[in-house]
Image 1 (cartoon, rainbow, N blue to C red):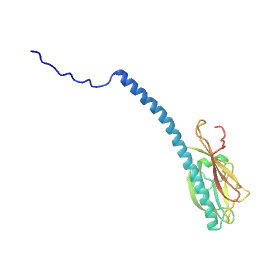
Image 2 (spheres, rainbow, N blue to C red; image 1 turned 90 degrees about the vertical axis):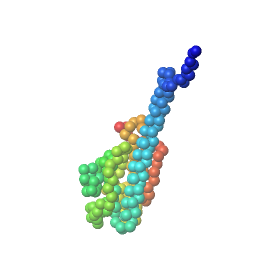
Image 3 (cartoon, rainbow, N blue to C red; image 1 turned 180 degrees about the vertical axis):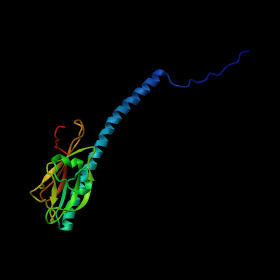
Image 4 (tube, helix red, strand yellow; image 1 turned 45 degrees about the horizontal axis):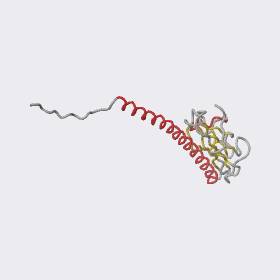
Length: 184
């Protein structure tokens, strides 16, 4: 008499199945990570641009409300609470910037807001400061006047640049097409 033994179904996968599955996973991860990097960079740039636009609009509103000149300018990266940098340069917007109310003599009466420097984007201004007068327009002369601030990716193969433009009337607008950045 022979006893029939029931066959157990095969458990596990073959080497070929495992290699095919791993290849598909590697391809999906490679495509996903590079796409995710650009999403993160775009979000970082959008956050910096929106912060700058918000601060410029805040400065203009404060100038009107306080009936005083209010300046947005690069701040000393080592002492942001001190307000504007004594000797700002065009590239110093990335280190941080301040919004200050000016007294009648043009000195700092009070620091209204301070923004720490950008980490993911280079902020390059063609003006050393933007000073709003008590009617909301830009003051001409000195460091101020109509101009723009560009937001550039430090990576040469990165995302497109954006520019915040401040008109002589104090209006702020955003440009995202045709904006170029200097070579790093």
